[in-house]
Length: 155
Image 1 (cartoon, one colour):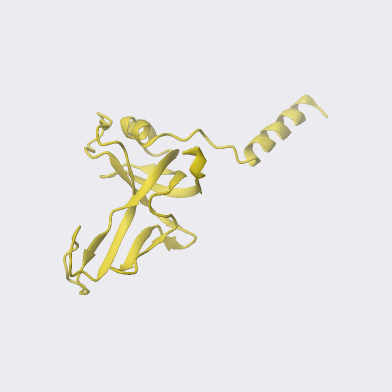
Image 2 (cartoon, one colour):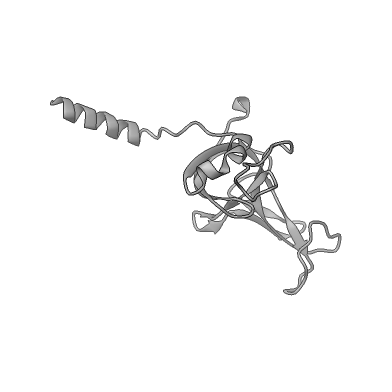
């Protein structure tokens, strides 16, 4: 084999071996938003949902808390530490970003009747490494390209 062929095989093996970039923390990402907008990033974070609920009418107002509410829906969010300063070049003032898009044809969100909310594709409170395209928006949006759960002993 020629040295060039060996080099090309090595690059192909490295690419196909699933190597991923070292994941950022939510704080690292939020401090440098402008550096990452429009790029694919990898972030390790514990996810939570931003559920909003309303009465079972099409015109009802979506509320954070509602004792009589029957329908709920909300995006997944990645939260940075509350003391994290957001990138000074950003207009964003809250240290969180939305997980957007879909996974295997289904929206990445939580939804359903108040007493039977189903979330997809993540589990509330679990830690994941999520790869996605970071979009400039208020709040910033991370469009899912892939993810993996972080085992409990590696958090």
